[in-house]
Length: 451
Image 1: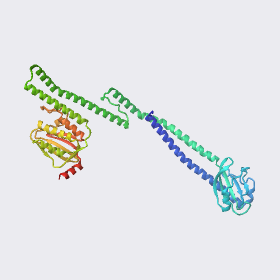
Image 2 (image 1 turned 135 degrees about the horizontal axis):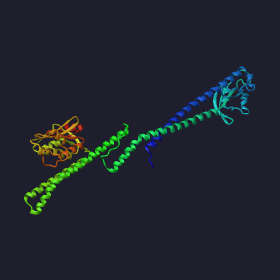
Image 3 (image 1 turned 90 degrees about the vertical axis):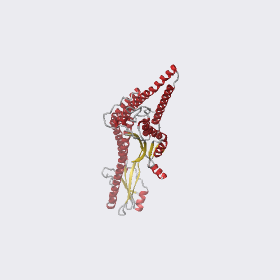
């Protein structure tokens, strides 16, 4: 099925809306005008009947005079017929010729009960509106009879038909006149989108995220879309650059142990095994295994989904203190978060290991909750990091000045874990903290259970 363009659909919608509105307005006008014309005709018929009734009462002899009933009322030509109490014709308009106005239940009701009313009938081949009224019992042959006044509604119907045709033509004309400016406006509005689409297709063809989409001149929704897409491209470029740096750093970190392994293997090939060489080979293999494990953990952490398990941070702190005599736990109250227990255990273990390797003295693991945030902090008695070092400490393969050992990925894994849990990781001096959204209801329930 072929999809229509936005411009075509917008123009079609505008045209249909204009036609519908004008037709609805025309229908309302037609209804009002029709009611007004029919009411005016009914009043004219009634006025003529009153005149005939007055003539019958005051000068009954004039009723039978030729042409007495043919004078028009205003611009409306009326047909009049007078009958006596036995429904026999007493007088009639010359304009009727050989035709006779229909005598029905209204005439019999007017004679018998003195009632009046309107009805629609045919006057020859034309539709007509008829009014019947009773005559008084005073004077003349028509006393106690009725007067019948009729008028053709052919002209009225033609007037209403002309009005309907005018409304329809006006609606179509207005729609046609509106279609051109709407099409022009939509074309101008969609032109920036076309440029964005062409530029995006070119970026897709070249695969170069460094290119940017053209910024529209007008400060409208299209400009906002362009800015958002450019921000997305900038984010993709940063992500791509980060991956390139990561690959370069990983290659650099792997080069050293691999070079050492090759050298030791070459030594073994030439001189045979010795305890020192075997020990060196074991250390290089362990370093490679640890680096590979950290790379795998970091990759999995960055690609994992948001966790849904409920984890007690205070329990993790107490378990870490129970497993390590150099660690003290400070968890005065239960604190729970929604997370991945294994990942949080690994993050806490990395912080404790970092304190062991690069800090000194006893290590304190503290858990607290404030303002809806749960904080898991690890602090040692060393000098800690300088502010400029704290900003870089959680980067991949970062090592402080003069520091050796480790893969340089422990704190990067901690940061990735915190961000996957909707929080953050930061350092202040010798204190390293994981800050996560707390599950307040669960914490309160746990505290009650513990008590």
